[in-house]
Image (cartoon, rainbow, N blue to C red; front, side, top):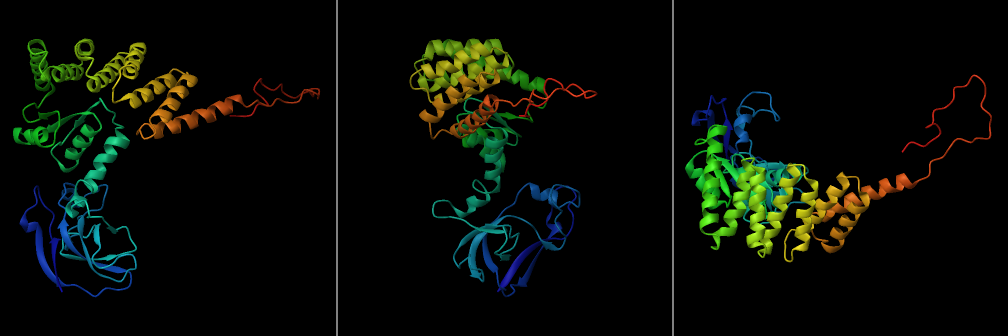
Length: 389
């Protein structure tokens, strides 16, 4: 059996060219115990690879010259001397740019994948490294919440494109940055972002600010001239969001309040507007009005973000050192919305608060007062004898 392999033979200067690579053919060696032979169906071509082609210090070692170019792969097991992997298994790994790869089955370099519902190629994209990177960044690093605006650089790229779609699925507003009108059209028309900014057309903050002002003007025209059309509520909602981006917070509050006055019966959008309104009040330092807006979500029938409103209200109670109020909100969230993504965090917070409460209620021991103080000994400070918490 002959294996075709692509090797990196020289360091690129600028963009890689064909001269930096070579294609060779070599026999596939026999397997030894614990090894698996994989025939690749797809290989990945990712931006990080360009950095690995340089002989420079980075987060990962450089690609070795005259060896198979690194890269993620997916394929099928066609021979195995490992008990975990059988012929016909679909697998993903880092097999590199070659038709076949011999992999040690005892290492993380190979794992089984389920292709019964997901195309095998997706394990190099949406459910592979780019997708996991996007999900982790949005949910664990940014901790994105419904109603927030998520701004994504390189929005048309492998990771950025998934971040925007995940953000929309969470109820966020997704705004992307991309280079050129064609990419921006793909970001909004193909990926479903709410907006995309062409950084080539708006290369400086002033140009971007002027574009925001133009958007504000257009939204106001729709709101004033066509308030009862289907686009009226969306235009007023986006007007408030755009005013926030332009740092015109008082005008944004006015827009959100106008929405609630005109379209308050639209419960699904009203909840998002009240949440946005609460965030603006918090940005201005007005906690009381923020609490009022979040409470309005709970008092409006049919709102879809009641679980998040309870969570935000609980955190506000905590931040103002009102543990009883916070605990009541957390417990209501856990009881009413057991499957909410905020319930796990609420459960953790209640356990932490219970521990703190137990520590505070534990009586502290005092030093016995029966023995008379001895001469020449220092008088203990008032805190002496107390247990450290």
